Image 1 (cartoon, rainbow, N blue to C red):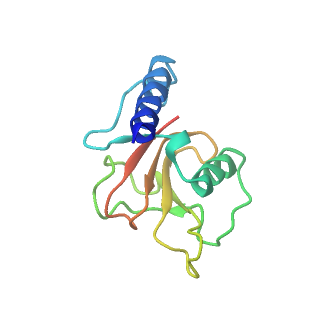
Image 2 (spheres, rainbow, N blue to C red):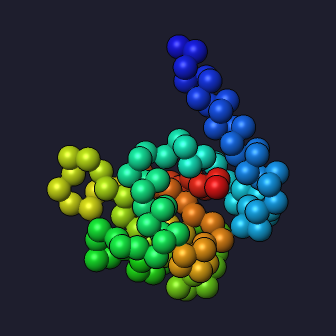
Image 3 (tube, one colour):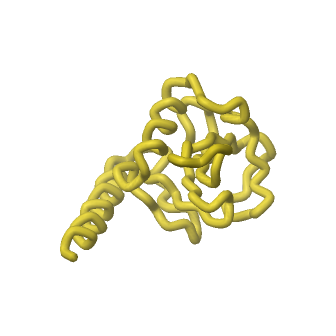
Amino acid sequence: MLYPALRMLAGAVVVAATLASGSPALSRGVPDGLAPIAVAELPPEAREVLARIEHGGPFRHERDGVSFGNRERILPAKPRGYYLEYTVHTPGERSRGPRRIVCGGAATAPDACFYTDDHYQSFRWVAR
């Protein structure tokens, strides 16, 4: 039972260290109402997608990199086209599944990325 507590503490340390590093994308802090998630806490498939985003691809799904409309209004309000979405493969799922990473800003150097595992019902800010 100690392991989850240690993992949570490690995640908090990573977030604090990341915020303290002065990275321009993170220096503004966590977007209002969105809990942070450290990269190390993401499923391995999501970490792979983040690496692909930073390298400009290749991506597994034809809809990866398309504009995300933020119709749910959970993410911070930005101009249309600011957010791009990417599929995070769900093992055992035949379709694209519910998991996505949505990033805002430049395609290969986003200002911020967000993770959802419930098809846009909720998001967590990816602390990198």
